[in-house]
Length: 90
Ligand code: SF4
Ligand code: SF4
Image (cartoon, rainbow, N blue to C red):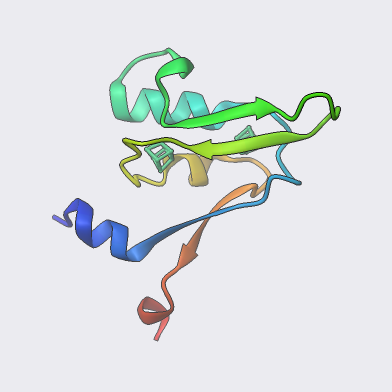
């Protein structure tokens, strides 16, 4: 089984805040998968409105993120994605 250091070496987060719709399903997926809880406030990803700009969102990855990738898999519009390590693609 791969350990966290191996995953860190292979998994690179990509995010495109311009695409984000603010649905926050990524927060729910994160907390359900990692903490088996239904409380998005405890997620390792935080979506917040880009006040006062309507329709703009900030995506922040918080300390404790396990790099599981669940949020990148569930984002319906590709605002979160996994950047492949160039070494891995060879
Ligand atoms: S990053 Fe994706 S899943 Fe998360 S709030 Fe934005 S659109 Fe929704
Ligand atoms: S990669 Fe990080 S932020 Fe995304 S679901 Fe996993 S723990 Fe949460």
